[in-house]
Picture 1 (cartoon, rainbow, N blue to C red):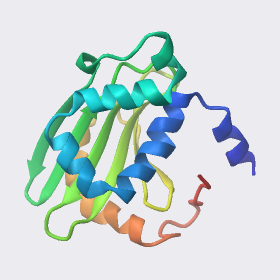
Picture 2: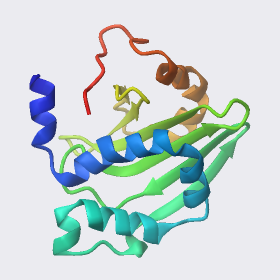
Picture 3: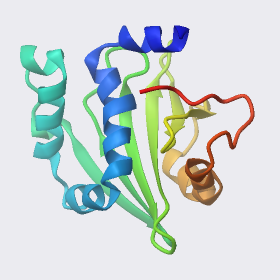
Picture 4: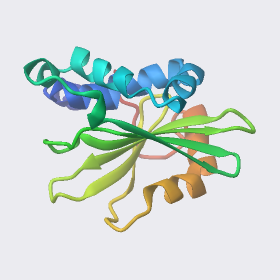
Length: 169
């Protein structure tokens, strides 16, 4: 219950990046890859403006977003570059990942930490949050590509990692 109370106090941007977008991604992953693979920066700006108060005070512009596609064998990674985070746990990047062989997908975030570095995290289909790395020198895309197959199994199996509880959305 404490976790649920804490999540309600987070700013809208945090809720968008850690609750709304991952849920929508897992529901509509094929559409997300089609949309973002075409570099839909205006779609991102419109979504952020609609879902956050900050966007209403000073609207986000499409130029503040970018989409980069990388392919590592069968793994496709779309990196969504977001406006610079102003608060801890806001994201600089969101990674949307897909294995073209088996259609497994996974949602990753690069989140601002209290000390100014970034955490690499994953969010599963069952809303579990996995802290993957706090290494400031980590090549995040390469790490995701190298570990995607193992990590994508988490979304199929609730309780896959002992000690990690599923968060209510």
